Image 1 (cartoon, rainbow, N blue to C red):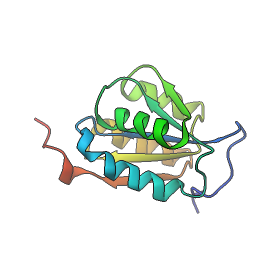
Image 2 (spheres, rainbow, N blue to C red):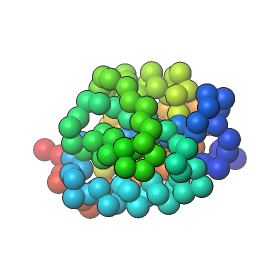
Image 3 (cartoon, rainbow, N blue to C red):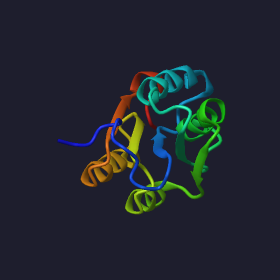
Length: 135
């Protein structure tokens, strides 16, 4: 059975949740992100650390940064972009759990696959109804 969000941190202090997702999410989608993360992390706040990328000024990366600032005031960000960044984060076991705001993107699909292969708990939030189809 895969581990759950309630398991203890993997030894690096605070519980770290990697938040990734679709870059087409907009500021008006923040309520969805906040409600989801509040529900999943309720028993850990405010001592959780949110890991995210700094590659976008919008999308899931920006919404994760905003959530971290407003809720737990502890953000653990990584510079860079693309699958290589998330591969490095997962390969070095930066995350105790992963939340993916997914709209069928290849990059987020790879994050899901890699996290599950490492037995890191993953929650996938389907956001296809909120984003315009990829062109």
